[in-house]
Amino acid sequence: MSLAFESDEPPLGSFGAPELPDPAALYLEKYDFLCRFAQGRFHIPPEEAASLVHDVFLSYLSVAATIHRPHDWLVSAICNACRYYWRRRAREVPLSPEMIARADPATEDSEDRLLKKITIRTVLSRLDPRSRKVLRLRFEDGYKLRELARVLGVTDKRAEKLLYRAIGRLRVLDVAAKANRER
Image (cartoon, rainbow, N blue to C red; front, top):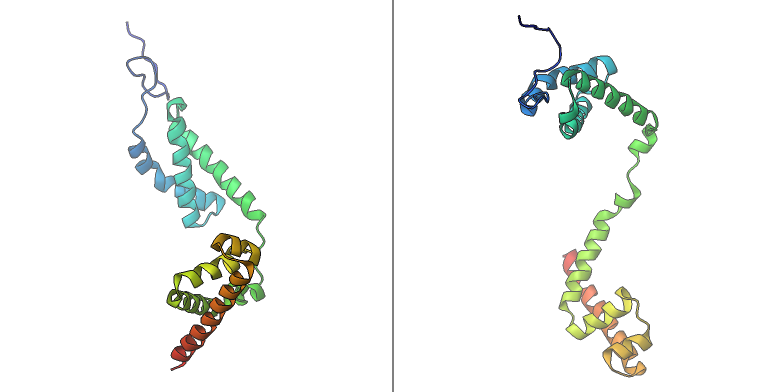
């Protein structure tokens, strides 16, 4: 006499543990259902629903060995993910039409800044290495004249003269670059 019971439990493997469904097959089988479920029941936009389903499947993969009913777990997980999505969205404040129409102040004069950067790099590349070093130490690294003199191994007066000479060369080359640009 054999006893057979009908059960919703998955069949047991050789060691008494439930057999795990193939994650790829489960994904293909449940993906569309979960997306439609999120869109229909929770009114999640299609792109966001797809993203939520991917997140749910990633979570599923990390705990798949402990789940006995994958369908029920996935439906519960997508419900929780959708609720969290709307809680997070409820805290967002939409931009007013005036803010949308206004340009970002950081990008308003980006063309001018880019042009200045290119000009500065071009002009600096035409300077001799010592003048470039003096200008970099003074203006980029913030060295004072006394520190500049110490780094260059010269007197304070000589460091001042080198700095002003480098600035003068920079001005001459900048004027030439601007003249070439205007032609």
